[in-house]
Image (cartoon, rainbow, N blue to C red; front, side, top):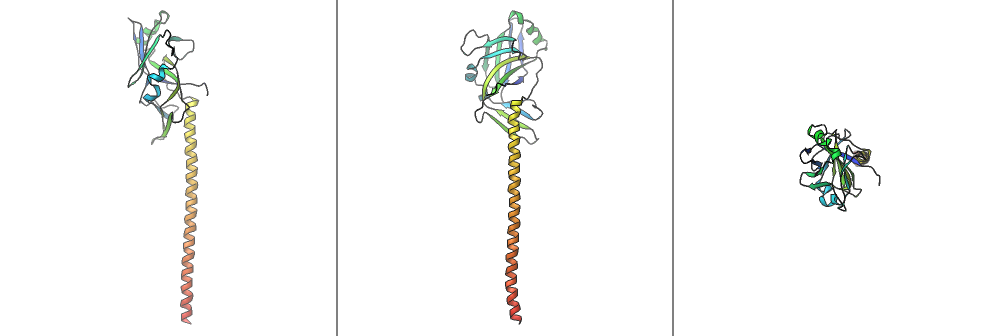
Length: 223
């Protein structure tokens, strides 16, 4: 499996300067994303990120998804976890206490300089883990119902939504299928039209034979 992860952004983080606790929502359920890649929107279903599944992951809290900017961490083995999270009907919420060296994050969050949370993930390769459908406006909707990995949560400066090559691949596959289905339909319609023409020609010939037969009889009677 390719070691490529997608990132998506939510826009809710908070900081308590008295306790040093930073909290927010990293994953939002049942809410359409912005338009990704100019072509599709996305919905994450609650079953994609259940608490049981997330407890099986090793999740690092980062800044801007930078690999060397570890703010907190959750380990599936339960050893010295500094990152906490819970799952409710709205999504996946997190909290952690800023380290002394990261105290500036509290002021930056309260000032709005850091204004969003994000997460990195990979969709499960199992069938029906994601579904693509075309909408009436020509865009597509991607519905994710199962993750393979949730790699990290992250505080981010710019709440950008991006479409990676791996997510676009699913869209390309859908478009290729649509094109193939279109060609099949066009071929079926062409064959149906040809058959219709053959049927019309056969009927015309049968009528011609029918009238010729009786025309010959009428001509015989006239003699």
